[in-house]
Image (tube, rainbow, N blue to C red):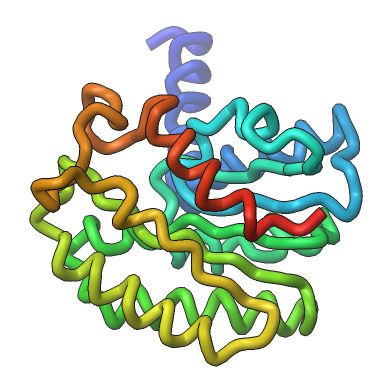
Length: 218
C-alpha cells in the first residue's frame, strides 16, 4: 500500500471515530453558535426551543409581527436533548420568554411511556427555574400527527399531565393546539400536514399562530 493511500485511509478512520464520539445533534448546536457569532442575537427576545415543528417554521417571525423571536428548534430532538443542551440553548440568549414544543419524539421513540416524557418535561422546567425563577415559560401541547396515531393515547396522557403540572406553577402557561388540529371526525386534519403526515404546512402553522399569539410577551 502506498504511503499516501495509507494516510488517507487513516484520516478517514480518525474522522469517523471523532464523529462517532459526538453526541446527537452536536452539529446543530454548533450551527446555532456559528449563527450567533455571525449575527449576535437580540437580547430580551422570545426564545423558541424544541423539535422539528419549530425547525421547519423558518418564517415564524412573519407570523408574529411586532415580536422579537429567536428560533432554536432542531429536528428530531427530544426533551432529553433539550435537557442535555440546556446551557447552550437558553442562558446565552437571556430570553424574555421561553416557548417549548417538544415531547412528540420522546413518545415515538422506543415506545417511551407518557410518564417518562412528563418527567423529562419537569426536569427541563426545573432547569429553567434554576436559571431564572421568573422568566415566563409556555409549553405547546404535543400535536396530533396523522403518522403517529398509534401514540395518541400516550400523547393525550402526557398533555394532560404536563398541563396539570404547569397549572400549579407561576409564570407558566399551557398552550393547547391539539383540538384545533382535529377534524369533525376527531382525527387529525390531513390538509394541514405535509406529505409525510408528520410536519405541518402553512395551514397548520396558521392554526398555531392564532392560538399561540395571545400567550406571547411583548
